[in-house]
Image (cartoon, rainbow, N blue to C red; front, side, top):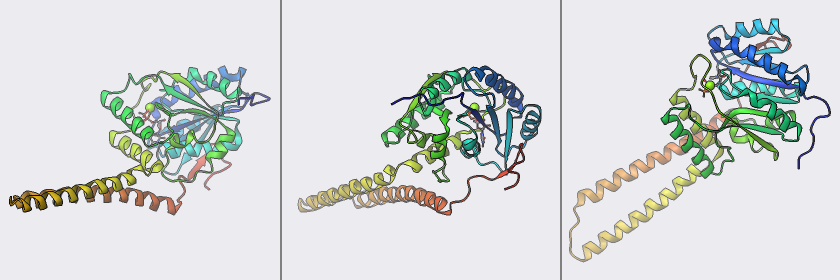
Length: 325
Ligand code: UDP
Ligand code: MG
């Protein structure tokens, strides 16, 4: 059921994770300040942008500090070290949870279409608690990325993970959703995996993703594969069950082989010994190693989760309230 959510104009917080974004930041800051101005008709005047510096090595933090001194709507959070996009977004979201009505997350490189933000806010005002930005197509991606991304989403859906295809981290959430998000404590973060579990009222806007305005992607193929693997193993035990099924199939196969050998022996035919010994030996050895590897992945995840380590540390903020916690 949808209902009007806000009696007054909602306060919007825009959260931007930044890692070595020196080349794009000036344009990004200007664009976001303009966006806030355009949104004044539907959002409150004290809406603001929070840049989360995820342990950058260039002058990203200096630029954020400078912008924050020049514009009251710009805030900055500096993390102690690089913790990855997901934890950086989370740091920003946890910071704004009690300081906004709506929070938008998007990247520093302006690849997401900010013209859709107004539509997102309108949907939130109509009662949507989460509004997802979904890419219409993957034209700008390389062939490899397009194929692997599609495969990844298909596997996730097959494993029963409630994921919206072609949605990454461009989304609007209400503060009540942020409070629910705060209750997830896992270290292996894959935000888009829990987003659809946080509300019944999820809206969608579609957009065409642009190329980066400058700078380079921080997501190498290796990092993307690790991220996809985190997504799968953090949300599904199907790979573990798959091991069991594989074990059953191999076991049944070996019984058939044994029966076959018995029949051959009874019929007086000799079986060449070498193949029947070495092939199963290698097959089983391989399967056992794969199985152990998958189990090991889950054990590793449990190991990381039980430590319940903090996912990030804030070094300082431009508002200086929470310096060095
Ligand atoms: N990012 C981050 N920490 C990292 C890597 C990236 O905060 O360790 C930020 C980055 O500055 C950008 C966003 O996450 O704002 C998305 O990164 P990028 O544009 O490189 O990813 P892509 O769009 O190529 O998938
Ligand atoms: Mg990008």
